[in-house]
Image (cartoon, rainbow, N blue to C red; front, side, top):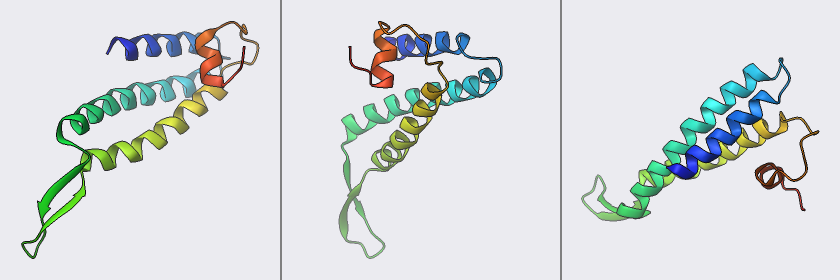
Length: 111
């Protein structure tokens, strides 16, 4: 959880660098990112403990193997999480210092 807190703190600091018209949008995106990170972490733990595939009985009484509901949720949310983070990062002004390691990572810059 400390890893998430560190990333979250850094993202929150980036909001202060944005223009006044971008801040309300960035704050809403930040809230979504925070929620999604916590949820993804919980889903990862559940998948690690229960497995990605579960056995269940279908309506005919047969045992079938199927994707764990947590795995389905994780797969859906991770794509949306990436889209929200990308949108948030696009709001960060381009005039940031090039030596910011975190910002270089999220923007995909090479040093």
